[in-house]
Length: 247
Ligand code: BGN
Image 1 (cartoon, rainbow, N blue to C red):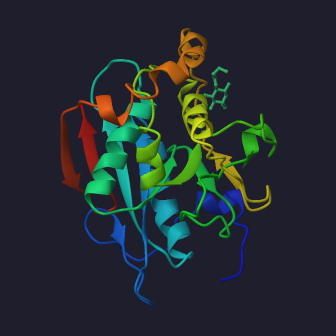
Image 2: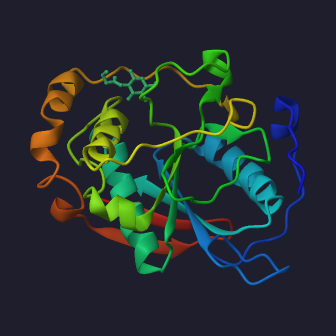
């Protein structure tokens, strides 16, 4: 497979893809998959983005000759959005289905280079270092949000993500600290390969207590995460994705 750059215009054109199995699972047919990737997307109330994301991502991922399933983890209440907790829930669900490679992705981020492989390697990877809204520049070295890949054993080792970040910001920085604490340093592909376009939306208001939470990140690592996760959920298989509705 040659790396191919997709123009932003093409992201919004209806592209052809093979119909996945019910639940948004795609098993590529050329050879038996050694590993399958779980694409896990925290979600609430962004119908248009979801529609664009699903149609584009199936088209994009199928060019990579990988096997994958898309999980949409939806927060089903009116409390502040808890991105990291939704990712914890999605990760557990994927692990229960024997996925060992977790790709966490925001619903508004669309990759533009087919060389940006949605699979895991030895170390976790920050996949979206060059986003158009940041003029394709990385805002800071320790950024580990947006789209990342991590093996499930590493995710479990650091006790997943914190469940305590409500609203926008900080939960990804907390997660980065967890990894560093275990001497796991994420890496990146080149900016050329890590190009993304972000779907437009109003800017969220950053949460006020995120700095305070971040300061105490290492104190909470053992007690706040997968070990303290409690939730109710319903799983439904849709034609393009597995829907996990979380309360
Ligand atoms: C940072 C946010 C991240 C976010 C990036 C990119 C915080 C914590 C206080 C330093 N971090 O500023 O969560 O992913 O911007 O938008 O707000």
